[in-house]
Length: 132
Image 1 (cartoon, rainbow, N blue to C red):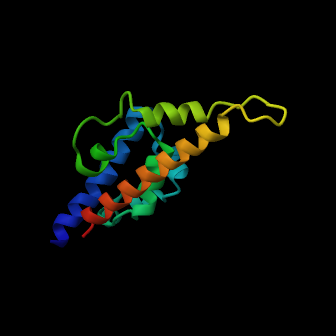
Image 2: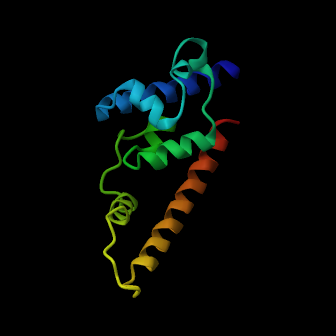
């Protein structure tokens, strides 16, 4: 059983490195961005698991990264035409000054945040099931 878990852990880490390479992110920059030391991706440390919080953080940092691909190696590496990604990209655009009036932006941001919270909860539950 432990060997099976170790294979899952290093497979996830290997897929993270594949993703970084695909995105053109140098490994050292990627390690820094996700706040994980380089040593975690080599030797015996490759078999250690990343916490579910760290995986959720990485998926939040890179909304284009498919959780199904990262965790289960199912589907495509990148999520395509995902409404949550589109909503997140829209939310990250600079907001114009409204002079104190609410033009509906606050409601839209709250809706996006609720959607993200649902996604994080679902991913955390998936990670918990996979690490049992």
